[in-house]
Image (cartoon, rainbow, N blue to C red; front, side):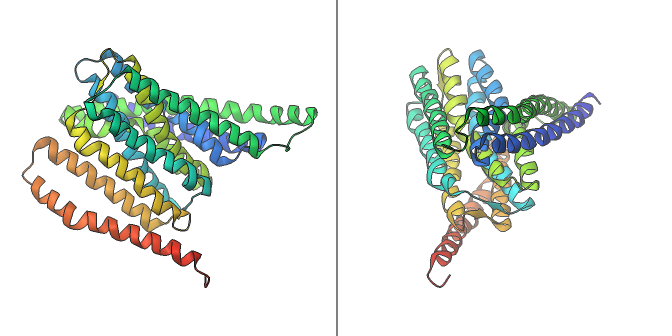
Length: 359
């Protein structure tokens, strides 16, 4: 009963926090003259990644009993969940429009840092120097976004009185953002604890809980925020939140985890062989999908969502060494991967047709 109550209370607080965060972020963007995409990539994205930061850094610092594996798995799993599950679900709720800077700047950065993790982990460990390199990346990225934001709004508030007026208008939205972030973190914690309690009460193994609920649970703020933003038409916030969160997860969460881990973060061979390549592939797939008409259609969202279900099924079958695993692998190679190629081809065809002179 305690697990059920925590689950329901966490869900209620989570949704209320997402509502406050999206409303406050949209108003803050208007008051400060910052684009909704800029707010989504920074304030909202970094804030909703707070659970990943708390879980991974604490797990890495403790270091023992698989803590370091949890830290790495949480980041990789969350990034996969964010794109496939959350963006897929958000696009199913309402087709998403993608801003040009997201395609030309932020998604390539996401791909680059995803590949960087794989390269740094080739020696089987992310040491403190690797962590410092990653964390330096988030500082440079954030500074770049701030500079670009100031350049974009240069000259919009030139008088002293105008600046004070903008500052005054921003106070309440800023408070909404802060309250929303606090509620998101608290709600996610309650919901995750409640879900784990229910799973154990129902006899589900802790291995299955770790494979599904840890990564998905820490991504609940992103899920709630992006879906609510999509429903409210704040689609730049919905997509910017996911891309920004994934960049933050790799550079900041994984970077800090490697810094505080006593002996660095071990990178298991299984992660290098499967999970990290999946994370890279998910980031790469975003580029042709996003660039095709600068949007994510409902059917593309359904494909993303289906891919996450397939990924989760593979993890469950692999963890239990189920007899269906070879059949599943064949289906992935013979069906899922060809479908992926078709999806990318159709997306690019849409893009090229839209750019043709006849269009």
